[in-house]
Amino acid sequence: MKRVHLTIAAVLIVAAGTASAQTVRRAGEWQVTVTPSSGRPNPPKNFCYPEGSAADFTKRMGNCAKHDIHTVGNQHTVDAECSVGTRQSKVHMVITSHGSNAYHAEMEMSVSPPMPGLSSTRMSEDARWLGPCTPGEKPAP
Image 1 (spheres, rainbow, N blue to C red):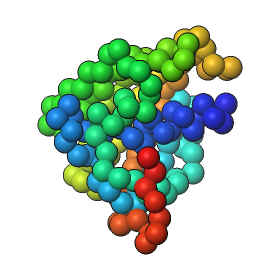
Image 2 (spheres, rainbow, N blue to C red):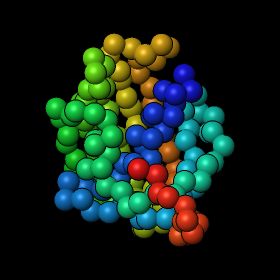
Image 3 (cartoon, one colour):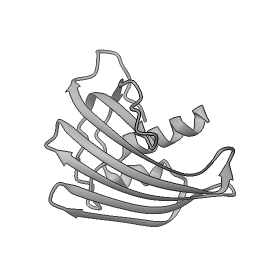
Image 4 (cartoon, helix red, strand yellow):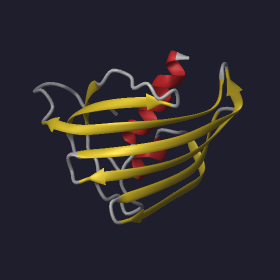
């Protein structure tokens, strides 16, 4: 279950942007708080990231037959259907940018065939930019 949670968190972390690759998550150190459907936030964690766009998001999900990204103002909606091996994933995500220093994301994901203990999940993520990455720190892919 921990690996599943980390995979879903990675999906959320990479998400942001538009079909034209507009940057929403700027490069640097980000503090990220993931709240699973239980409503109890996980402790915040810091990550060093390169710039991120929604186009980057689906690259990490495997082979995506559907990859729809729509932007209205500061809100970006991503709908994707992807596969890794024999597993199919459907994701619906809404990312709201708060300038270049913060974003909020809501995600729903279903997996078929189900992973042990997981066929679908909902979660949210709140992130804020802290500044440049520590010298020598490599950005997460």
